[in-house]
Length: 444
Image (cartoon, rainbow, N blue to C red):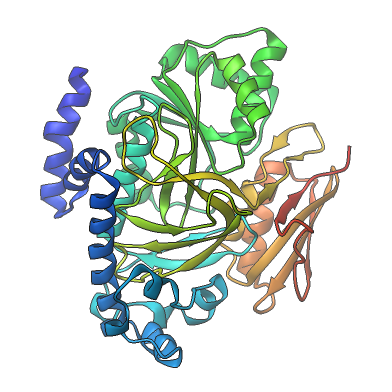
């Protein structure tokens, strides 16, 4: 193990945990061992954690007490997995309408606000706890380690930028964490030839162990490398996130980077849900932290339903995340006992283009619109290079500050000449496949 990684793991991170009364290192070490447990032992651990969560929800979460009582369910009724799966699901609309009632009365004043833009076009604002954050961060780092990227290794992230003004203390905290973990975050929300030249120079100078990025950003950079006959120092792995990874896209990225691509699956509600190991034969679910329900291996893809086992502040129990998928039968050749997803469907986001030819990944809009509280559901359509229409189901009229934030952030990415209209609608229809097209680019 490289010296800096050893120092970070054995001295710096444990010291930070002790100072802040946190448990990230403890959870990391647990997950490193538990991934090799037999499936039966993992399921027994998961069931014990689930029972504790359900007891807590029945005791201290007003909305669940009311909802489950109306469904005729009590905690004593839930003795088996089948009993659990009969509990009614939780939707984003319920979170929007009953967010405060979904918070545990035991965690008043201890909650961290967060939001998701929703790859399905339905934003949600919610709360989490420090304990759940430590669990999900440890799970994410385990998934990344399967590609060869370990905490403390140098990495480059083709990612986005924060929306709106960031408090100075938060900015410095983020910079310190990135420096300690040796991560370079490069904003790829507005993609130009000049950006890719800078990214290429940074890759050659920094020589990361791995690259992490939105699928569309990785694809555009791969096309740039091919178009300009450039190459980058070989990395251990390329980690693809946030968007569908089609096999043709995987192959093109691997050809340009000369490195394997690892698919991941996550959401802002839970962070990391699953990821590929070195076998790249399905995505291993972080089952010590989440329960994932989906279709069987031989069925049509079904709604994915997720339960977060450790967010006691605002429990997500049988939550409809808005994606479709199947569980994969059998044990992976890697030897891990973790269950697997065959793949993910349901996320459809076109890339958009600016008047001067820049490329904007579709994930920009969920990232932005999670900050607009009046928007309950949306679809973005680029009708021309200088015009974007956001069809939105509104909870109320767009406020002045929300309109200002929307215009400012879209202007940063698309340029000052862009015209953006918000058109209120009653509903956003799904595609014939059941998917929701969140961003629609121009034809041709």
